[in-house]
Amino acid sequence: MRTARRVVAVITALLATTFLATGSGGLPAAHASGPAAMADVPAYGSITITDPGTGPRESWTYDGVLDCTTYTRGPSGAPQSIKVTCNVSQGLISNLDCPLMIVSRWTESVVGARATCGTTLDMGVGTDGMAEADLGHVYDAITCEAYVNVGVLVPPYSVTCDEPGLPGDSP
Amino acid sequence: MTTPRRFVPIAAAVLLVAAGLVPMAHAAEEQAIGWILTRVGSAAEPIEGNLAASAVSDESSVFMFAASGRGASRRVDYRFTTTTASWGGDQWVRVNQDPVPSVPCPAACDSPVGWQWTIPVTSNNRALSSTVYVAAFHVRFTTLTITSPGWKVHRWTPTWQQLTTSNSRGSTMVTAEHEAVGTYRGGEITGGRYGSVASVGLPCDMYGLGDMTLTGGTRARHMTCTGASGTVDGWPKRTTWRLTGAITGAGAGTDVLIVVDYPR
Picture 1 (cartoon, rainbow over the protein chains, first blue to last red):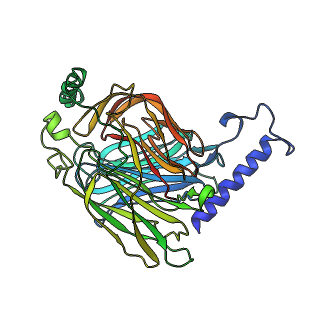
Picture 2 (cartoon, rainbow over the protein chains, first blue to last red; picture 1 turned 45 degrees about the vertical axis):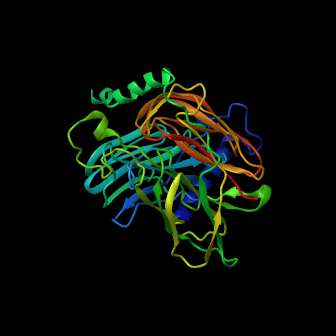
Picture 3 (cartoon, rainbow over the protein chains, first blue to last red; picture 1 turned 90 degrees about the horizontal axis):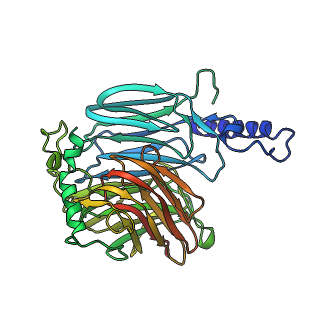
């Protein structure tokens, strides 16, 4: 339900900004091309990578807005890195940004956590904690990654990349 | 400081390749197995299960996706957890000879061959009305288990083609024990008559610079080492998948572009 509301909100915002950018509703003006010409909309939503001990799972709230895929690499029957990449799909939403990306992680051992929109917020490898930053315009995709530099991901662990928008934004 | 030391063996491999002493791999269109998962009835159903498989080589991989529609209207269904899983990726203990890492590598970081991996096959409780395709390359001892009702399993022999870090012309990437370092310049693969799905993972996930673009599908997909370093796209007709651009860096894996054809 929350996901649907977010999708509706993003699409509504997009339509609103598109309408504004096209003036009286006609064809887009010549100068209204590219991200700079259109106000960015926060990419409301989240990506979670978790393994409580029953196997890794990836989930996201971007269905219908972004095309999300999972890429996993590991040496020996366990992943060393799990990266969820949510591509901007078909140009439907082309003016997303991440004004307040919040990356959080928890594990009993160590896990690295990082998110990317226009730029990257990398927490490095550790046990728990969170970090947040303005990651700017989404050019290609939003990514969220759980990783370790040596060895493999040891459950339980959880990494979440959450974009709630700036305070006062209403998804 | 330790990073250059980690690639001393790879540097040695560079010399071997340069001397013509190491054979180069070629794109493979065989040694792949697969399964097609369809619904028993017409109602959309979530899918849940897993694939257990053991690696046969440094290039062992699994690629699973779902597609809706038929023929020229076939589209990748991203409500399924589209997954590319690749064995290989950790030489750290052996290569850099640093102290034992805080998270020990159960394989002694030697080779992925023989190690079993259980990979989820899931739609995360989303009801799917599409068909799920599970393809695996260079694996054995496979067991596909579907625990959700409403799905039936058919065996499938997929056409699997791939560009790896060692068979890409024009690249200077050197692959040593399922890690690669150098400059990668891409290449192209032509998919099958009934369309195909492509998965890319740039070989610079450890570190690197540069960007590459995948074309041949729904639209150009731009990737960078530091951001979106992978993508998946599909096209329902014959197409040539082109990976252009260049990256320089190091990656924990050998497969860069995987193309699996849709069955008729």
